[in-house]
Length: 358
Image (cartoon, rainbow, N blue to C red; front, top):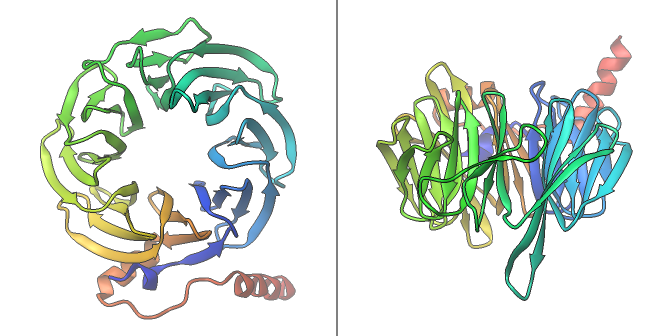
């Protein structure tokens, strides 16, 4: 199936997309390399647009605020209007952010061009009003923040490697990795937590090595029967919960992957690869590795999926959304009919007509 023919919504951020996010109610967020953040509702209508100073790399939402990392700053925006509430400058680039027990946990890092490496990082806690609660500076960069069983863990690079339990104020409990290699990524889901390492190891937070990939692990996705791991050389593997290989796929560099459209024990794995200046998006049956859909787009920078939707962000500013009901209907029909994705101007006109009828 051609994914372009099954697209439910297409929008433009008007700049290269650096982040996409789906809310449970179907709303879509997209952030850009030049600092723009847009929120669309579940029908595709623009709710608000906000401009920040620099690239948006992470986002965290509660009932009132959207907190983003924007260049060197941590910025809080109103969830309802996008109006800026406060902004705090961190030391170095602002890399990641999470809500944790009513407070905000952020990660920053300082990169030294001469050393070609990160020379200092910090983990911060702020109140919802932007008031600093504490900061812990360290030599290692925290490459991944993951949550599991009421704990928030930070996967570390060199020199210590391993991970820190940052659930409470410092000093943090440090757990050494089973192999002495840096953490590159992490994922939590389905009552488990996994870290990927530069030596190819995929380990649990209890220190068990589930499998060893052919290269440095760049991304992980939890699946109903196990997990998917991709390497820096474009090697994708899907394994059982015990680490046994189920299927694999090799090709161009993988920019992102995620799970979407779960249905009982059946789910799909969406995999974005880079082909020169363009991107290829493939959808696989996660259990078998059968490819069910493919589409060619501009270079895909980010992806996120839920049980009902999947969204990608592209280098040319395109934001594309697939809806489970439409996707499955097209898939069951075989060759898709050529329906157009929802156009923003058309959807706005339809909304006005609905309002006039009331």
